[in-house]
Amino acid sequence: MYNTPYTQSTQMIEHLKSSIDDCINCARLCEQCSAECIRMDMAGMARCIELCRDCGDFCLLAAQLMSRESPYLFQTCHICSKICEACATACEQLEVAHDEAEQSIHIQCAKACHACAGACREMASMYESGETNILKV
Image (tube, rainbow, N blue to C red; front, side, top):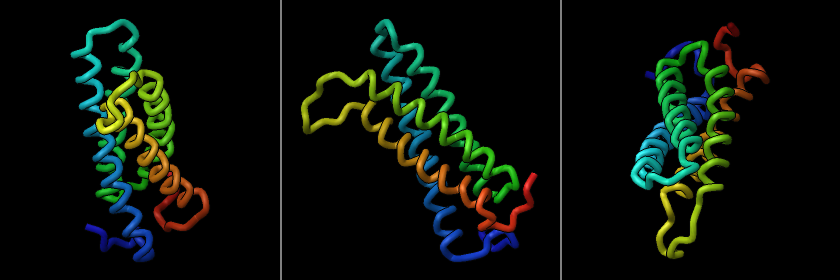
């Protein structure tokens, strides 16, 4: 899977694996968060639902492109990082008081979005800095 001419170092391979995991985790939590927003059936949830669904879809796409080391993965990761940050912000704004022992799905989703955004931002920066030999498209 990772033994292609695109990967240049063990560090790049490990970052790729970690970024894929972050994207999949983020997609999972975005799905859970959007489902919870729908169940809450409260005014003002539409934007969070839309962002969670878009974010989850982009995270899965980014994970797929990274898995096959597509030459488009860096551009996709750049966009994914932007969507993840927007989703995190929306989820953080919806946070309501919860028992400290229990993190709401909104906070869990926001944390996963921030982690994924960071991983994708770093992946996109590898392309911009020339750390990879995947053809620029």
